[in-house]
Image: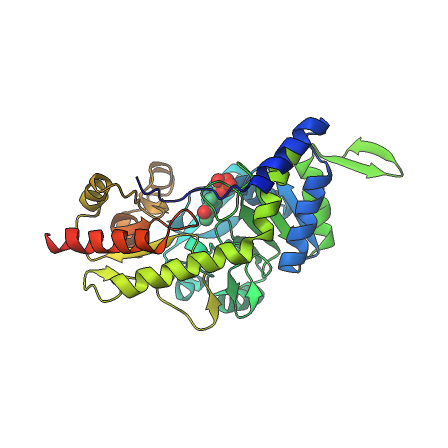
Length: 368
Ligand SMILES: *Cc1c(COP(=O)(O)O)cnc(C)c1O
């Protein structure tokens, strides 16, 4: 079976982990420090915090901004549900905005009509490793005095203009889940350039503890969202190779584009001049006459694992029950959920695999 994705674990990753296990210092050790410093210099940010997941990063971001009951947060309707779940968990209200079908990110022309006096933040998602239109989002955030929390969970290394995503907003959130380009098992990173926000993140990540004058006190009711040292050790060699890993993904994506680009019932990813797409996921959109789920099943028979790309939150039980969302409220999100398809990508594949996957898809689609 050609897998949709596979973590890239080198011998160096494994020996790093063994080193930590033998040392007996499993949490908050040198590798967590090193991972945080490496991310800081890679992104050019002032503060980086290793946390236990991408979801933990998103949750901490909203807590650090003091977002809670009575506040509204704008979230794109097409994403992994964690983006909105954390809004619900801090007691705030999720306001869904539809996406556009060129970048699968929030449709920035539809944000302004969703802003009310209660709106506190916008959470753009850089879906599939493509940057959302940050120029529009920053303009709106400035006009209405809103915070920006970037869900860059699947977009480490992506750029808008020549600036890396995750560094535009008050906070940027990354995931190190095995499905992402680099992984620590479970894990995440939260970044910010603001000292006051960083102080809050540090406190809430670690039980509410603050050290002052070499004394320790619990100043708030905090969480334990720390990353273990062996997880950081696993991830560091992958981070060092990130440029290479991204180049591999871009090359494979271009290869797919060449093979699939002229197929009339497939929309391949749109290329934007001023954005660097890192292809966390190579995601195509099928025309409405194609039965996507049947295609998934047929490709499985050909030993190819493919899957839908992300969820349409307006179609999920929790959000449609609570907010009475209909499919038609965010039609593009729903269309992407129903007709979108993520294809295998990553270091576990070679050019012949991409060719085989593309030609099999074309062959199967001919028979529809
Ligand atoms: C993966 C992902 C998350 C969740 O990250 P975890 O590390 O699995 O908690 C959140 N948002 C987006 C857009 C993601 O791709």
